[in-house]
Amino acid sequence: MRSIFKKNSFKVFLLVSFMLLVLWFLSLLGGVFVLLILSTLLTFLLSPVVESLEVKGIRRAYGILIVYVFIAILIFGLLRTLLPPLIDQVSSLEQAVRSPNFGRQIENVQAGLQSKLPFIDFGDISSKISQVLVQLASKWLEILTSAGSALLVLVIVPFVTFFLLKDGDAFVRGFVTLIPNRYFEMTLNVIYKIGVQLGRYIRAWLTEAAIVGALSIIGLAIMGVKYAVIIGTVAGIANLIPYLGPVVGALPAIVVSFVQTGDFHMLVPIVILFVSIRLIDDIIVVPAVYSRGASMHPLTVVLLILVAAEMKGVLGMVLAVPLYTVFRVVAKETYWGLESYGITKIDAGKGTVNTG
Image (cartoon, rainbow, N blue to C red; front, side):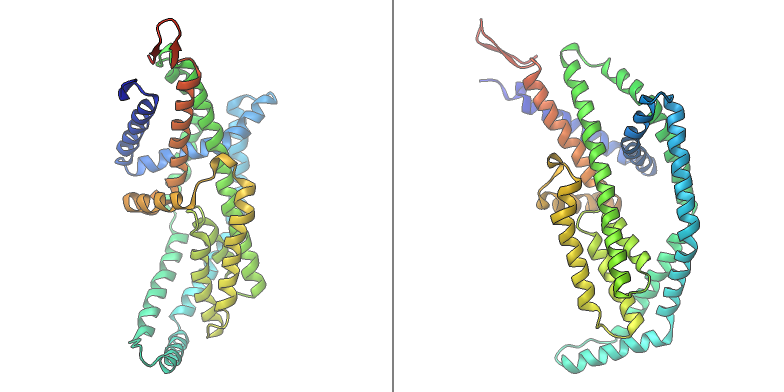
């Protein structure tokens, strides 16, 4: 019986532990870590497009520039079209929340609830709700109009991503030259599988978020809820954290409908809308856009998000599942490689195990 230290499962455990240690060390770098992670994810996302242009005879560097120009034009068009009305709508929402009429509406709702539920002491909830909503509206406007950190990301992330796309193969070759010959083929297989599966996951991840955002915008617009584009966009972005999109979308939709109508008669339709979006996402979208190998048990996802939120807040919640995907692929493919590439085999003459 082999010693536990020679078992392939133990070798995989050591490799994953080392990767976690490196990840933890990089996370101590703060902003640099975030920029590296964003650049890496963007590299996996754009790599297939760049490679397809290279296959057509376009030099890799020129192909990357073509992709960048297309993305820049797309972003410029979206910002020029959507940003001014978006800022106007957020400002309008903030003014509506600050208006005296809004406070009176909340007081009327509180009085109605108090008469129906006299055994509950609601206290002075109207002023508290108004304060919270005013703060939220102010923060939304501040986020939309603040360009400092966004400008840093828009400059550094594309710069780093360019060199990762251009010289990524050279980096891989340099790394592989450090690997012992007996692990050479297995290492190439692991790196290839990480690239393929993580690229597929990121594309599916963004596609799912876009679909949830689009369904939210369409549903709210049909219902006549104001600021449907803002709320749907927030729901789509929030869906980058699994299961959070419909929840984040429903809350502002309920608030806006209350400001718009003065009562909660749209509460049930809004809840039904976002529950339906959640079901469509789970039953139709997720099976369609994700590969079978990328699926994870919901309990696993929830636990990952909770742990990541405790460690790195919102950023950790966003990156938890993609990083878990990388570690899972590394563990699975490394174990398969150790078993399948002749690294672990029985010596028929001596009846011993050769584990290297």
